Length: 319
Image 1 (cartoon, rainbow, N blue to C red):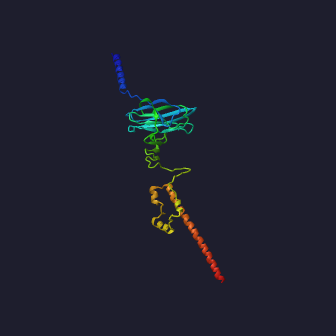
Image 2: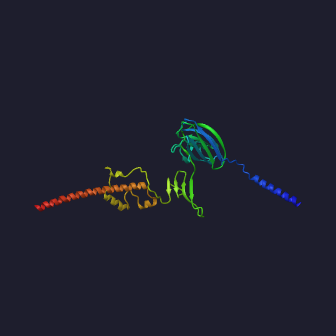
Image 3: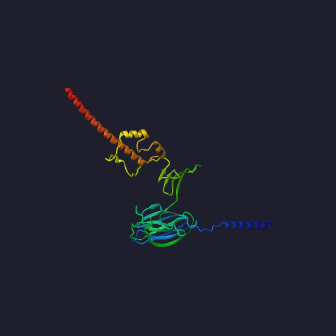
């Protein structure tokens, strides 16, 4: 009797475990890899494309990230590139070029093919498009490998061909990007090294950059080049109204700084624009140069006047 009860208990336990497994079975089909190839015939033109696959992101059929790697060989010379596509629910149904994360160009400088993505809801798809015709006298086969970084339900092979020269915009590779660095061997949290946000601003050590590059720290460089809209040589033009030294003295007495030069308070609150400040400082240097030239002329006039007076005195003495 005890033996039968033990067997019954084992059967019940097995059934419970089996039912538990059945309850937790994930019926989602996750297809994350896809390989294909397309062949462009000899004499292909810029803008020719081959639409080769439709993807099916599992998140609402719309949101996913894909890495698309392509490579081809012509006369023993290879080229390869990797593109990164970000698809979300609200993307527009249009073709945009997919940004590259790396590119090994054909013969060093030539790029013949790129990847486009149409992010139409429920019909997101990819194509290879020609952007160069180097060595187009022969057919070229482009080999493709797609990796779904998120979950993808299926890949559907396509083979639609045509020519499109209207693609001008890039598909965003990400909404924003963060790089955190630190020491893995300590309990200290990582520090933000680089932050890129939607408008293209980049911060180094700054989480919300307000300019194309904001840096929280010292910049050490061998050289800095600043593009300028103008320069200060207008000071040397005849029509320039050079302030008198009396006017300069009056402005300093009233304002505590040179005219057109920011005050200490302004600099401490707002910083300085390096290019603009260099131009303003040069303006003051050029004005000083004009003052010195005028003073030198005045000194020469006084010397000549002194010489004339000396001669007149000498004549009077001789008389």
